Length: 389
Image (cartoon, rainbow, N blue to C red; front, top):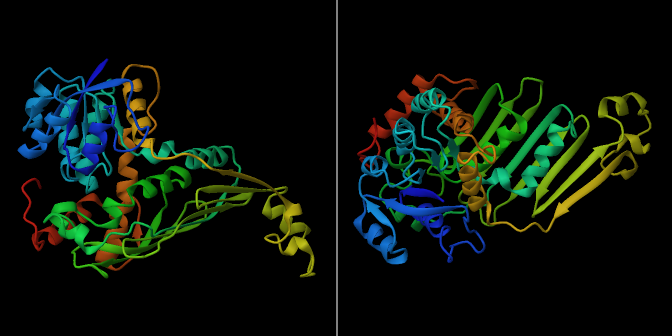
């Protein structure tokens, strides 16, 4: 059985650690095809606690020492964001398969370097914990889109404002809510899964105009509220709205194209497939506003409807880890290849850069420009980090 090492035992690190035991933090979220044999953290108290919970663990305070120990076959990285690319590069150089927590990094400049090292070592499996790619709702949406079920994208709207975080959440650590500690706020910490799914389902846009509110309703440095508008190569558009201060919040995704519409909300996926594409419907519609063809949202005779609901959730992290292990063993293909993480990160960086510069951003962004702007924020940050390069 593959011997797994874990670097970082914060909240998500503990979730991953306990998923290898018979007492996971998330019910039924067991990783069955690998064995956790070692953990690494700079906090000795966390190492002591891990050893108490799993006595068989080897413990390390230096991740390079863990990688060179010969005691692990693969590693999961769940450390602060700035460290993800640096530790990923080190693992790949040691020929050790690596699975990195979201986001893949804070800025694309050093993620390009990570991807280059990964491409030079294609035999070393590099994955990302974009576990929502295993969520049945988004798997179904992806299948519909890939089969041309909604046709050419016209519009995407995602309101994801149920990431509520009180002030005490940010006050719980001096690094939280700071540019130098986290490199961003709701975009970097809470919404990366949705941003990855956004590009996974819709592809990458060509233009981004965003309005990020830094410290809105919370005493922090980074963004707590974002509204972004994007444009796609084939003429479609999208709006992405997220925040950490709405109570109660909303999570609603709408995708509409020439052939149909997908809505995911309240743990239900609804898919309406037009019997004829909208451009054909337009040709047959009359000037009579009482004609049902002129009010398709009210007339079910012009589409078929399919719903998916009552899906159990919560085990996606374990499924993603198992998929990574199976890929290492040659049994599956990665659900979330590591090199794809730069796409979601570029969207995050472009939204922040658009606000920094107060203008529309064309993709791909200039990685040096974003890095320079981010470093200006870090220089004035209250948190003084020790890992930035």
